[in-house]
Image (cartoon, rainbow, N blue to C red; front, side, top):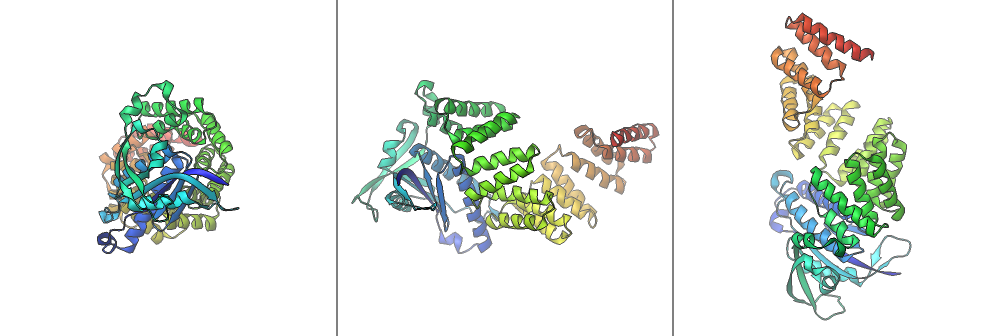
Length: 460
């Protein structure tokens, strides 16, 4: 059966000056990071199909407007992301994006698609300039032109096209001012969804505005899986897990093969003490999208908790194979390896996590604990780095206090113990540590008070 889709092709531009001078690992990591970013954004916008080949993607979206918004956001985010890749060596890897709307056909009993629309979108992408979105007249006819800035490029002969020559256009950006000025009465469900998805803020006011956008979208179109999923994320962040669960379940009911909704619902299930149900939804996310590295990492953690070392190890490895630059996976794998007696491999993964994210507080903390037995000065340095990145890290304050206590820096150690108690007032061990330190300083009355508090918490 033929279905009309907006086909989006993306491709990394292979500048020989870059690709011939940097290491294979750097390029592999850059492609993996691009792939991860692209798939994450496409899931937020509700792509209906994807196919990754070489260093580019094919995506199918139901709406031309959604396809254009996704494409522009991908270009902007990739520009920002590639500046921070390993060593800055791969900062000249722009992408080209092409988009066309037309008929597509699904291969029988397979999630593979063919059709003239795909071929034309690929040819349009090949004509696009670096970090630019080119579209056909068909796309312009379908999108809401007043909210876009666009320019005509030229007329091209596209190989395999049924038209002898085709006008192509460069879509530059979304005019947020024009979109914001539109009266609510003229806004469609898709307009509200795209307005919400285009927001990048994280403060309370911006999250409230994004929530309002998704709620308005659902008022106009109750069967909108992407709006349900994104609203679920906002509700969970606001602490309303019951409402978030309802939104995730609606998204899954409306689109059973929606990987991001399964993944987000699984996190909620895991955080509310339902690990078996969570695992089922992580697996469903992976069934819908086999290279969903976030689901692989979360499943690895569950297998570790269940004592299944083989499956945990396999899922950690698979996540890092698909995304070598995944700092959180390196850190978590390091914890797993250290716990299972492979300190040398654990150290390697902590180092890789910190190479990827020098301000990664948890990796500094974990690496510091590993180092305590053989290099106290290095351990102290990593505890201090953890606190520099995350000043409210109670465990790091306590552990640094212990190190300073043992080396005789009692005044500073006391300061860290007190900060840890302020941040984590129900931890008996820190009270006991502080009691021992105060006794060593000759402050017996204070020492007894903290010792009694430690005993109360231990017995309670």
